[in-house]
Structures are given as C-alpha cells and as structure tokens.
Length: 300
Image 1: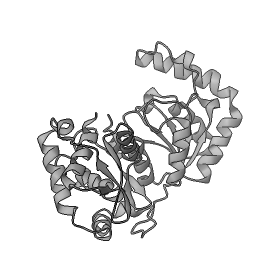
Image 2: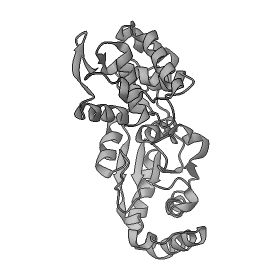
Image 3: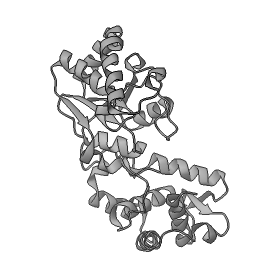
Image 4: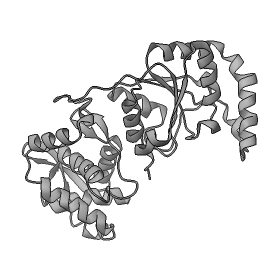
C-alpha cells in the first residue's frame, strides 16, 4: 500500500465516523498545501474541478481501497461517504511521524466544520482552485499568448500536469506520440481524452507525427537522440505535411501544447515538430518545463 493511501486511511480512522467524499478530498488537499510534510513524498496533486480542488488519481485510488476491502461506501449527513472496514491501525503504523501528525491536525481542525464552512475556507485560501467550480468562481482560467507550446509528462501526475496547463492558459493538448499508451494512470489515450474533457481541455491525437517505436530502440546517448531527430526531421516529417499543417492551424486557433513523454524537450522529437509548426505560424516556441512544472514532479 502506498504511503499516500495510508494517510487517507489514517484520516478516516481519526475522524471516528464515515467521511464524506467532499471532506476527504478537501482534507487531503489541505494536508498537501498547508501542512509542513505536504502529506509526504509522492502525495496527491490537485486541480480545479467542479467543487474546488480535486484529484482524479486520489478518487481512483479510493475506489481501489474499497475494492480491496479497506474501506466501504457509507453515508454521513445525507452525503456519500467512506468508512473503514475493521481496524486499520496495523496498515498505517509505519506512516512517517510528521505525516501522521499533520493529517491528524487537519482532521481535528476541520471535522466539526460543515460542508459550506469547509468550502468557504478552501475557496478563500486557494482561489485558483475555484476556476472550474460550479459553486462560485473567484478566478477565471487564463488564456495563454499565441505560441507553439510543448510539454512532457515524464515525472508528472495527471492531476499535476493538467493543473499546470490550466495555470499556463493552455486549452488544448495535441498528443504527438505514435502510440499513446502508458502504464501511469491518466496518460493512456482513452483516460487522457476523458480527463481532459472533464476540465474543458481539448484532446487531439496526431499519430502521423510520432516516431515509430522500432526507431527508438538503443537510444543511449545525446548523440543517438540527435541522430534520430535528424532522421525524423529529414525523412519522417516530410511524409506528414497535412498533419503538420493541421497542427499549425490548431495552434493558431487556441492555446495548444504539443505533448509527448520526455521531460527534456531536447530529448524529444516534439521540439523538431515545434520548429516546423513555428516556421508555418511564425509564432515563438515555449517549452513548459522547469519551474512552471514544479507542482507536477511528485508521483509514485
């Protein structure tokens, strides 16, 4: 069991009662953003959603904990909730002391708050996370300046990546992987399409501009990558002029990022593709990386 999951079980245990879906998400969010431990390494990332901060990954893992029999569906004050199944003290015994302390403090502070009081506190303290709220929006999502944006999801959680893209004002992802599959939750084409749709980010896959997997074998040095990208630019891109032109049109239409896996744009074909798109659109290239992605590097 992951430590972040143990932290959630600890919160439900300390509550001493069923914990509503809204409560557990908001408690975890406050643990991550207000407590010194941040919930520990590889804790959940959050993004603006219908009722404030939310984590698709956390909600999915809660479902997994229920299927494994650690928690079960319940009800509290007329709302859907989760409760522990039996004594979980043994499961959470080796959780780091600072995480245990911080999670317990959050529960003790907010367990007596009503839903409205909890929402008011979170919204006032973290207005960015109201950007997609159905309740009230204190901020609007930005719209990025016209440019050819690129991003790599390596080292990112899906929640963290989408949050960063929204903060950057990106409204569309063009997936430039040849084969959009991934073991990490959220980055398989079907999941990514659904999750992007949930936060009003368009998702389009353009496999024609990807690199076949057989050409990516035995890449073990910067020079081997450079050789591959030279071949890509010289031989593969010229075979997909319609796809490159279509991407250029998408980039001009609304703030769009070219997305692949590699974090370093110099180690990814998307940079060569961005150069071709920039030559058509006469727009600057901006790689979303480094400090702008600092919120998405923690993932287990």
